[in-house]
Image (cartoon, rainbow, N blue to C red; front, side, top):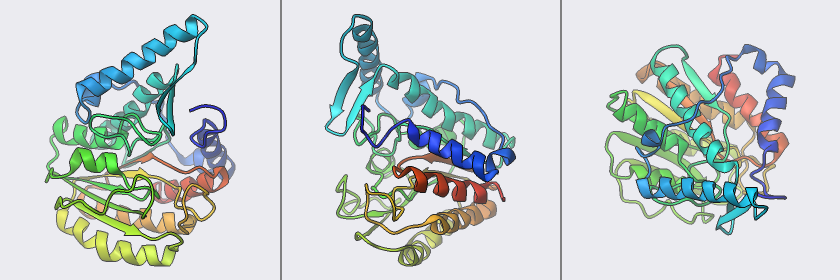
Length: 301
């Protein structure tokens, strides 16, 4: 995104380092992300939006070759560089490959350490550090390519997953449950009347105990009643109390607890099938520790 931007390459390095130092990496099966096809990306996005992102990437490559600018501004917070297009294909490809592996029974679940994040990317436009909505693409893929009848999407990022809601609102094959700080960017999530959206806005400085109680009250019964055949997680860790991009008060144990509750539901209804994909999380130390807590539960460590 450019020098000094919080959505930076060091985020993945921090996760990598933490998983190595903690020994968690030794217990994981690691796979490289393939490139997603444009047809699969278009399950969740318009052909025009996909073509616009591709065209911008090609234009940047030509500009850089000619000695020109290396960045294109999408919005005040979001910019594209010459490598972004390839990163987008890999990020979506990771969630799709994870979906295939979990559906085939090769893996019970998967965590996709990808960037840029995706849950603000709407059906027809990019915003909020996000270009393509990797979780939405994978959820659509599970429904349309693998023939599942019901999928759930869980979003615990500090920001509302407005892009995911835009793509799935009114689609009764999907249930989305989310908890997020409000009022806060993107200033959405309180107006939806779609029956398949369970939005739980919370004020700044809400702590883990209160968030756990809200999740038990608002999410769990809906997920149990829905009986998803697969669960996708928009795993944002910027609700951590050390993360300056938000003002919520979660800690590593809260992320472990949330993951455990999701895993319980997946085991009862979805043969344990979970695909989790990284969204936010910008304090590097907190991000690494939180992903470790999340992955430990997924991997039964």
